[in-house]
Image 1 (tube, rainbow, N blue to C red):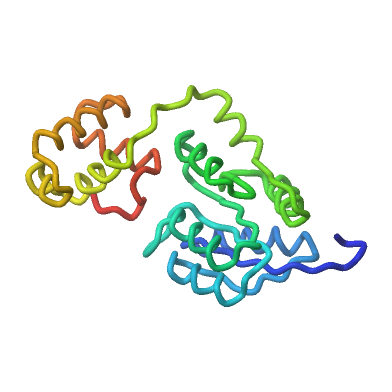
Image 2 (cartoon, rainbow, N blue to C red; image 1 turned 90 degrees about the horizontal axis):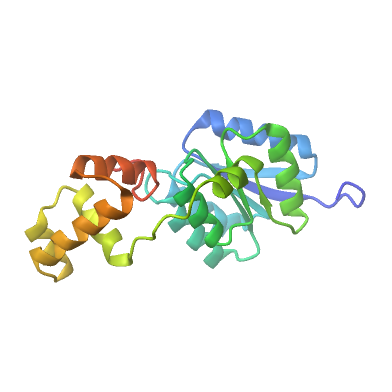
Length: 214
């Protein structure tokens, strides 16, 4: 890339300024990337991707106003040629596996070495994909977890919002008894035995937005 002086544009999306500054410094070291915008929440990120259609989006997995998965979907919709590298603080193998299944172009933990990030971003801009070594090691060492169904995820979100079985049943047009079965299934799949433990574990696993008020 340096030989033909091809230049690229990038948008950084993270709700922490110190992370944005660190990522900007790594992009600057590449030498061929122009940082055109920064976003501190999900809705702002979507708007900036639509406006700039950058070559690279560095995306936090969880921000205010719109979750990373929602932002990712909208970025793909409005700027399909944009390469998306997720830089996340979540270390759960479930979250990491979900991002890989979503076919992101790169996946890094925020604890990754800056040199590895620089290498990864460069390879992604060149048309490749990159999974940080720490991510690969975590996925290789952890047995695959049993996936939650779409309905279980809906029930989980409503439990986190403070709704009881009857209210959840009314919202989802199912019986309270069916809601209770979903609760039991959620606890079994996530290996917990109380609602409070269920919510804490689900937040850690990235099944709930980190900004959810428990």
